[in-house]
Image 1 (cartoon, rainbow, N blue to C red):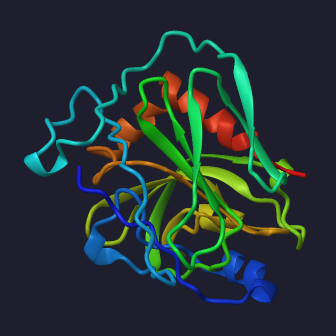
Image 2: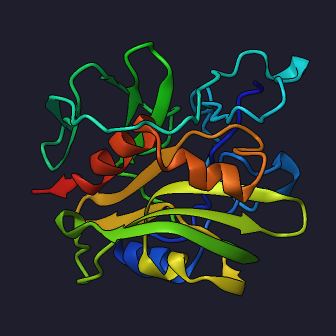
Length: 249
């Protein structure tokens, strides 16, 4: 699959960071057509290879998507809780638990961008999730139609202003098909219906902000039914607890 650019819009200084995040949404994400991008970074940051989440009914990838990683969306009869390890970012503040068979590697953003990225891969080496800690940008967005598949509070990541971020898995429509998002967000990005502000996957923290992004192909799923079916898989059952385990100390 063609690699995508996940970008931020540099909207505020650190002092005004939390206000920017809770009031605005983020646009181009995995599953969003490049032409629809609302975001810009102070220098765009090339992100990791994007994971394909496919059901049995999904058509074979096109020639432009041959590097994507096919993942079965067949539901598991019983989820087995894996043994866990803990990853802590180098500054010692944000940590999360992840299956011991998975790996986490850290990379520095391109020159001039703040923060450290942690990229989570499964036992086969497929990149599933990117988390960027200490970023100093805000979000901008557009009106969309949103369907929320799942959400839950993440109390370990309470923001300095008292806002408690949420885990969410959603689909958004804006006239060019559906885009799928999964990660942490302000609860305002989990409002359903027409004309809501687009997804923002940045949450404010005492050391800047945290960006979270589960990697989806473009499109992430053939339809919303396939997205709901993916929620019954082991992969979803492991990614969601990882995100819920995020903690700021």
